[in-house]
Image 1 (tube, helix red, strand yellow):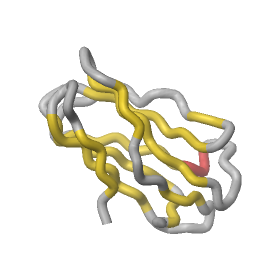
Image 2 (cartoon, one colour):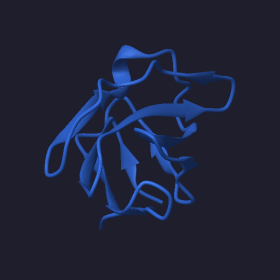
Image 3 (tube, one colour):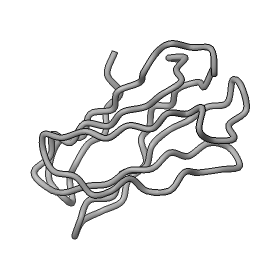
Length: 100
């Protein structure tokens, strides 16, 4: 499992999307909607996430489905690493994958 202190999500789908973070007992707000091939990022140190907690993303496609990533990462404030999720597909059939 990747140990990170930030998360990015690349929109490689054919739609506008937004995403948010989730962890045991908490979640972030949504990013703004963004297009393909743009990305948005969250610095995990800006949230009250416990050291070592698992973090994952939830993606919402405009006029489509909302899905949760299957793959999680582990938070560490001292990590100097970014997890990158890649979203591909269409509004109802997209896939979220963790790179690396």
